[in-house]
Image 1 (cartoon, rainbow, N blue to C red):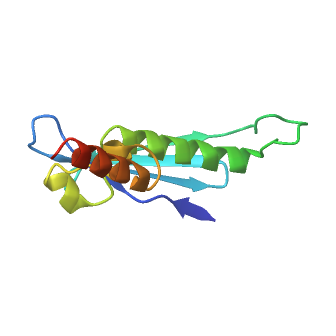
Image 2: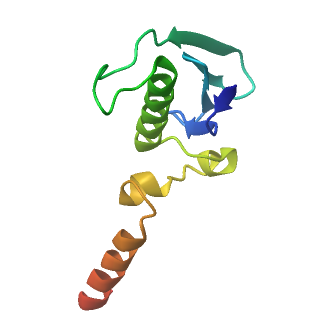
Length: 121
């Protein structure tokens, strides 16, 4: 069964094109498709041949390890400025992962509002 994480987008540094990045996992194979929106896409495949922590309570199979690695790569892209919608990328927007750190960002928003009120902003 193939699991595909949400496609991510980022406006390039000179704001002339939007980059697209998608990662999926099928069994123990991680497939990454990337390139400019509307342009030629490049594809890479990486097969995880062995799980981690074999023989331990937290051992992973190659399939589980592939999914964990794909999720970690997806999160790194989001932290690098990639966003979940093409429209947001076209506007140069950021996801809350960038704006407030990982998670919902609710605590960071509350903190910023409280500090703004104390500073009279």
